[in-house]
Length: 308
Image (spheres, rainbow, N blue to C red):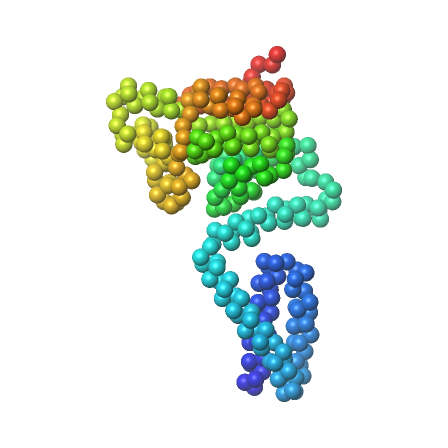
């Protein structure tokens, strides 16, 4: 009776180990062994001691090996939980979506003909895009996997993505999170993923206005510049990044590493290779719409820009 309990433990443990391997490495890798284990389960209907002993001998060593593998894997997960999410779960999400779509409607796309906008550094899809993008397919790219982006990627590495796949790139209060020498790398990455005639929509803090207000109102760097839904925003927060978020997240990629005025942002866009640029400022913010090549009338109409 005791041997039978031991057999069952070994069998169930081995099956669980292979199910874990199947989850992270795919079906083909483990299907043969699963089949063998299923066949071996017939032992429990034949209560002969020789078969039980054979089962233990055959799978005992293997189970010990699997135990070591799982312990190592568990230790790795504890030390690298973000890497597990990033490399094994989030990166497979687009593949799963494509696989499911092909099974539902082979060779088609449920949003065929719909324009696509890449939201760079948007944190979460729970944060709505401006109304101009109501008819766009929304894909989120972010370096932080906690917001469950469609693409986990540093914006400095956009060149590694497929070229000319998006009609628009929306980047709100993210470009200032890169050092000045990396700004051109990010902007040329936008050009890389944009289709011809596509545009980037940028929003960044207006450092000229921050300095003007600070001087006019005699504000110290730790004084409140304005109130937001998240709480009071100090001059320091606008210049160097929202301190509360940086502290709570423990991530320095939330810090601001450069700043822009209308003139400096336009200069950066021209240097990167954007042609037609519309730029303005309001509410302590600089905004720009910059096109790759010639803009079409539909894109200009989105923002009520005059067409020639």
